[in-house]
Length: 360
Image (cartoon, rainbow, N blue to C red; front, side):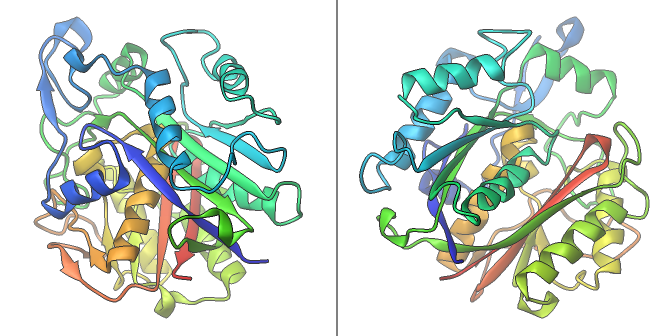
């Protein structure tokens, strides 16, 4: 069965649509800013966060994002019995319910949008977005649903910010994925969505094709990735096998690239083992920050825009190779005929996921 993917939308500090955000990346603009007194003990922190004066709430981000994709689809797709909504997040809506910000928000979504089916929540650390897209395809293949709307959202709450501060994992400037001087992540906030369907006619704009995806957990450590890249390696091997494609069919890789010492090293080892380290790769974390449960969706949506526009986006923050295995990091925006890309994600607890999307 052919599964179509399209109607991508992104709301971030860089813009209120996928087009806006992609335009910002074409000019290599970062959303990063210093926020005084926002961190633990009133520390100044560098974040990719909406300005506090904007008062952008979690629920408003989701509403605006869903409104944006609705305009790209034919008919009232969201309230159809043939449609499932999958919600991807790490912490959900803390603003309304600190102890149950995911399940309670799913209930709110069902009531607000008159959904015929209970929304499904996917919360698996930082692979949540990519995993949610893969789960969506798994629901469409056996005919359980014809359409799946996948939306991911996370914001920078005190809980999340203080947690990463306690790990000494934050950079005090724009992060530098895969660079020798990398020193940590930037946290960001965003909401993004894509729609998967077996019906090409629901899309007002030509959709792309979801080819395959898989996940793997190496259970290495609660926060540290496997030093051998085993989980990521296995996920990509399986994704390629399911797709019927090989490394030579992949035009670029959208990596996870958090700019931490261990994650970037792990990715380089995994792609070297896969014999894919010659393929152009970027990380988008220096543009959006690490948006946690939304990251996989934000970065997939931008990669879809790259494919549509035949434009590779520079991996901002990278200057000098900083991993033991050589990677072909994209150093400048460049035009290239793109037929297919690989998106990967890795997260706490040893989880890894990947997917392939190609031109229709």
